[in-house]
Image 1 (cartoon, rainbow, N blue to C red):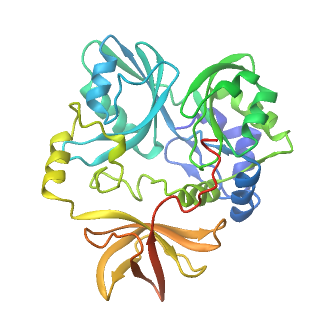
Image 2 (cartoon, one colour; image 1 turned 90 degrees about the vertical axis):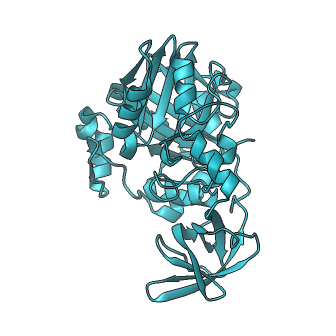
Image 3 (cartoon, one colour; image 1 turned 45 degrees about the vertical axis):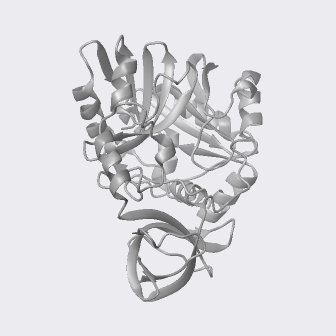
Length: 365
């Protein structure tokens, strides 16, 4: 849902020249790559990369009952989020399926910002609006809000030099307002790569200038969707539409730590029932014995029996091996177990392992 006024900016012209496609949400999607996926991946791990994530959606939730309303709509502990903090969580349907995974920002006592996936933005908005009480309101600010992600070990130094040394005070999953190009903008210490990183929310009219200013620093290069995917996969982070959807519950996805079962929320009864009865399938993370990589919808076998399927897979530039995520029948998810991955005209041996695959990330350092 990025701002359509951005289509004719040099930033977007660059995207178009590199093969970017028109997004169904109203603008240009970032390219798969600029210099190349492996080069961009490696640069993010050792220096700093800039990602155009303007396609993400942003909502403002306001009102006297906003806190209690969101506490029922989302799985995480909303009252426990302090002003200037943000938290990852889920929005579920009555069957416990994941409508979306999102991050909640507490802007003020009665003002919240939700950052949602572009593909689910419309249904997210409708679901939230339907479940808000009369004393709360929701506003979709996606059109006027642009989002850039600065990720990598030098991201803090880059931002401190360009914006303010107050960036140094941000702890993991905190945020603050900073003067960026003459306007108050939110910068949070969050990200999707496993490296030290920040997400910058600026007025859409300012994003072209900010993009150019950040790239003037020799430590910063642009990165596309391809590197973003390999980086998140090395960390074992789920992707909506791959590991997460409206049929999968957070329990099956191995994300119970982002659920507060001490409160009431939509979908809780189904989750409690599944915990009591036992899960039929569970998420696994596996590493190939070679550079060959698994692919989405490849079939997982254990001792000749089909037991599951691959949701995400790729060559890992950091490990120089194939890695993947998938779901298997309960009882076949043990760490260290050997599995066979079969796809079109290929078979590869793999071993179930713990996440993250890449353990040298700087996100929390």
